[in-house]
Length: 209
Image 1 (tube, rainbow, N blue to C red):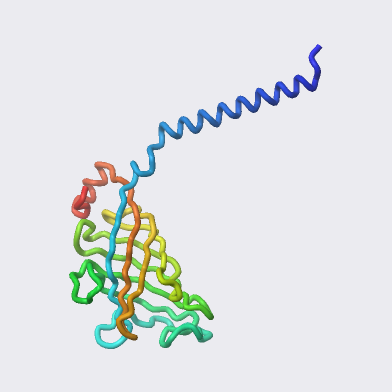
Image 2 (cartoon, rainbow, N blue to C red; image 1 turned 90 degrees about the horizontal axis):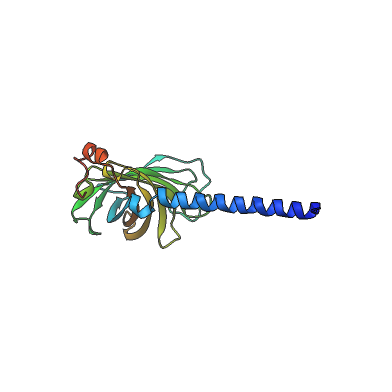
């Protein structure tokens, strides 16, 4: 007569074998049915320059809301109060010089988000006006820390030929004067490979397919 302990052990082994087989079949099915990410998405690489005029003639960034404070000791006026919110409409060029060829504009806002550190929250949209993505946008958001040599923001979406964009952007600030800075935007993103139907619908925007 078989021992109850032996029967229990054998039953456990059978259950483990069935579970392992089920996991293996699931992995195999996913491998067959789901193509690699690289086959589903197309990389997007851009490097452009944002011309930020903080004051004086041709100013492109203005204080929208004066925050309640307190005053942030790590920031210079006029955007040095906690909650200060600035709206921007900045020219974007293909090179760092302000007379470089224009390639679009950046629209968005940033807000002083720390009471003591030089940190802003930012949300902005890059509208491209030339090149293969003419008429398309990239939407970016994140934290802008003035103490960092490079700021990293998330690419959270896009429109037109950049619809469904995901990735990140690295921003490096190059001060020109107290009222004028240039920010290099280095975009590392990807977009879904469009279906034939999507290509036809966006044929006026998608120039590089």
